[in-house]
Length: 225
Ligand SMILES: [Zn+2]
Image (cartoon, rainbow, N blue to C red; front, top):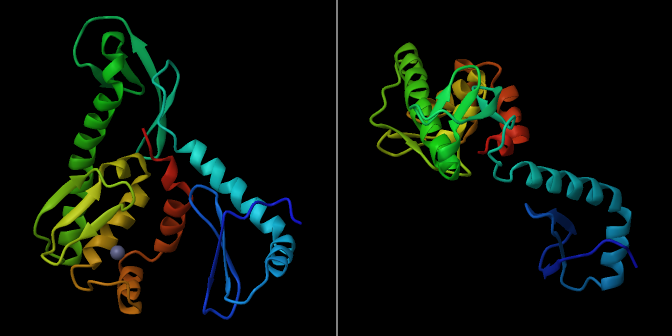
C-alpha cells in the first residue's frame, strides 16, 4: 500500500497509465481497463516523490491566491511593484488614494475590496488601452473595440470581430507582461488560433515572449486582491 491517497481512478480504452494533479491537489489516475488496483498502487509508489512535490506546489499556489485581508502594511501589486496599505482615520476624499502606498479611509474598510477593484479597473482601462494603441499603430493591426473584464482565467481575448478584452487583474503584472498579453491578442487579429504560424508571428513582434508566458504561468495566481 502507498501512503498517497488516490482520489479517483478512471479506467478506459487507453494503453498507458497517466497521473493528474488537479488545481485542488487531488490525484487522478487514468489506466487501461484491465489494470489491477495493485498495479496502480505500485505505479503510484514509484511516482510518489513527483506526486508529493506537485501536490505541495499546487497547495502553496492555492494558499497564495486567497483573497487578501485589508490590514495595515498588507502589500498590494501594481505594475509589478508592491505597495503597502495604510489605513487612515482622516475623513477626506478620495476613499482610496495611491501615492507610493495605498491609503484607505478606515470608515470604508468594509468596502475595501470593491474600492481596490474599482481602482485597478480604472488603471487597467487607461494603461492597457494606451499599450494596445501603441502596438496597434506600430504593427498596423487594427482592432475594433477595447474593454476590461472580470475574467478570472483568461488574461485577454480577441473575438472574431477583433474586439479585444483584457482582465483587470493584469494591471498588477509588470509592464513587460502586459505588453506580451497585448501583443498576443493583437496577433490574433490576423491569426485566430494558436497555430505555429500564430506563435511565429508573436515571436517576430515580441522576441522574448516565452519569458513572459512562463512568468504568467508561474505568477498569475499572485495577481489577486
Ligand atoms: Zn491566444
